[in-house]
Length: 200
Image 1: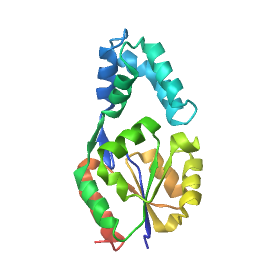
Image 2: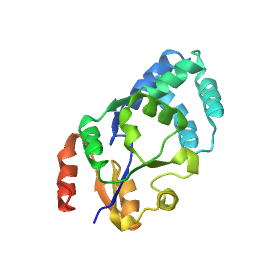
Image 3: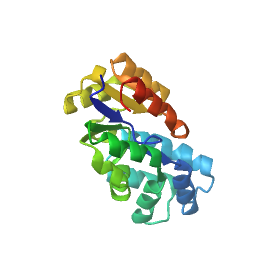
Image 4: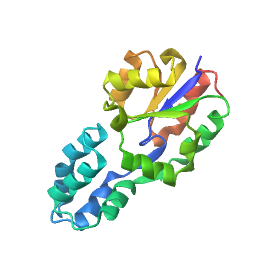
């Protein structure tokens, strides 16, 4: 029986288009080729989301490696302006919240969390969250799931984990979670999964 839900964020609760951030950064940088911008920031992005770089160092690194000419405010805005609401999921979350505790498990950063909670009311429906940048662990590696389990008192066999990436789902299954591999264009498949668990 499902008693708890554990949600990924990107391409689950919100869709995202990281190319929007890349274009915005390229427009104000000496590095104008978008593929080069992406290649240069990838390592820094991963270190930031893994909690290895604090926000100030992340911003400083991006400014340095791109020769970024914009302001820090513009950089943060570009980093945050990649999300759009996945409305069918928002409707579902509001309905589930009446009967189940809901938690977040996400590879993310404080800049993204700040923007998401500012821009999307849906995040007020969650009881708690485990973020990679806080716990310095990330999916698909087991420690972040284990941390979330302890932090929120989850029983994996009674928790439905919803994520858009197969690797993340595979680890969750190995750790005993119920799972659903989600795609925002196939929201009906999640509804069918809920029915199989007796949740109409």
